[in-house]
Length: 475
Image (cartoon, rainbow, N blue to C red):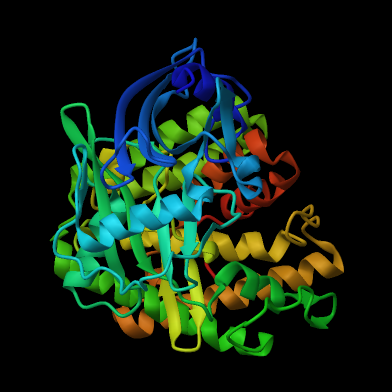
């Protein structure tokens, strides 16, 4: 086998899921090699599959971490796998195993049969998929994200977590809670795989049903956007779209109800914690710290410091009686994390914000954090012209129509949430506004680093919220 550490050191920075920030690793250290195929793991096998767990180091100590790379090892590579090659030396080819249906088949069957090997352990107590005897068809989904998802048989989705941390991944943890609560608003959880990580363990992958007739909420929103002066379809619906574009207005209210139902189920299955004065003080302090750090990277935020910090101070001064208890939440909720189907909305990807510390993602938070994430997503949809395109400037005839669309859709979402939860998120104006500002500040930093042409969207939101700090649209 070629020198794996050296090969991965060269290959990792080119992967969309690897947050290199334009830097190559100074050193890649191989921690574990867990074979998963073939079953008998004989040296004479034509193709072998292993899970490599590696730790990445950068010179400045930032941006490193522990990652998994499922690898295929062959002496002769089929043409279709050539884009996945990592290294080739002395007649041995290393490549990304997730592009190889033969190795994905082996991995899925281990999960389904709950057959572990040293270092790899399928999750007990999950039903597993019903698999045909023939080889499984699979293909990775070409979506830019922090993990890799593989579509299997057009019926199952294997989500492979690239960055690893000790313990159960929040995505699996929350899905198990929702399964225990009997939730119908999430795809069915079928299996999961855990691997050794030092003296602990980490969730490597989850397997769930794939909803073939789904359209993600982001695309539905773009389809629903108005043209200047009236409603119109600016983005053609995707193949198999669940609804006509005009139905989106009603669907948004249903989405609010689906999110409220998920919150209710998580509260029931995972418990709640009453909000305390020390808790609101810590929340406000965290928001202030994030804003201070953000202004160093995005100086355009600085002119809004006074009203923004006043909004955070208002959180610390809130009477805690009557606030929603803290609980497990989605943690990174936006229109791309919800699927619109003929049977209603399905909510996915409960990993939380991937860059946040694991303890924070596992903690209880206010449900208003999720609400704020979705409200911000409607703002993004309103001003993100087309997928991959630049944002139109707020204001003007077109910007005014888009702003009106945003206000209506945000109000519909909150109204739908209130109908199920029994309380309208807009009743908690100071706390909701603080969460909206905190999210927009985070987005301003994210876009400045990665998509500077879109930074105007969150910066405009900060300016708007700062100008009218406690006001939200009426229902």
